[in-house]
Length: 337
Ligand SMILES: [Zn+2]
Ligand SMILES: [Zn+2]
Image: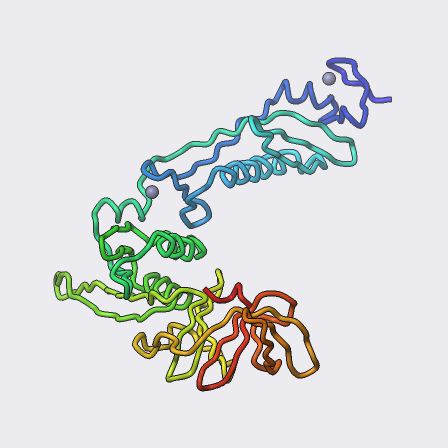
């Protein structure tokens, strides 16, 4: 039976020995130094520089990184005695666990996070007011509504930090809003995503802003004119009836009713879309046959529509019967404004 020569306690799986004495006596003789972690923190926005890049919302990651750092230090020190180390953040302190063939032992460990206060590149640009690119969001209707603004913000925030952090500032204007960006590449990526999702016309121009020592600096200006077309709007494209479809997370598109062809709204010239000139009637689906459906109209008459002209599935319920020179189409009511 092994006993600690200092405290006279027996060796057990919860009291392993190191260098012939129990771990507690060992730690009393040779305490664990606090583990130090140096980080850079932006004093303006609080972003933290971790693993080569700036993290905007670093709270959990700093603790995870500190725990890793402490683990490394413990493995280095106790590895030679046959111990593995694990360190966890417990919400208010770090807890370390040593475990090996000899047994395991838990203890608190002090981790000192040393912050170097600095300013991250985004805030630096924001302060100096210098930016390389601008996306101007405008609308055919003359103003951009709150919902569109929110959708644009959602699209921007869906990008990786590298892309979205290039947004320096947003100027809200009467006729729309301007997004100022640090770099041209991110501006192009963001603008094309917005045009894709919301449907719009993109115009790109470069403007010379300064010429220092033969080096030309240009500012990229991307003008994005969004269509005021709403999802569910019935329109005509080259004389064919069509339906505008907007689903969140998908590019806005137009479905041509006769051919069922789908075209991205961003691929269509804005003046190519005309208001729908045919007729539309409320209808209730009554029966589904192998090749056609039968609907009841409000005047209690019935009509037949081929299955190939039905949009939105063939559940019983409310539909809109659309009549035009190109034929009759039945669209699920909730798909149409
Ligand atoms: Zn002891
Ligand atoms: Zn910052």
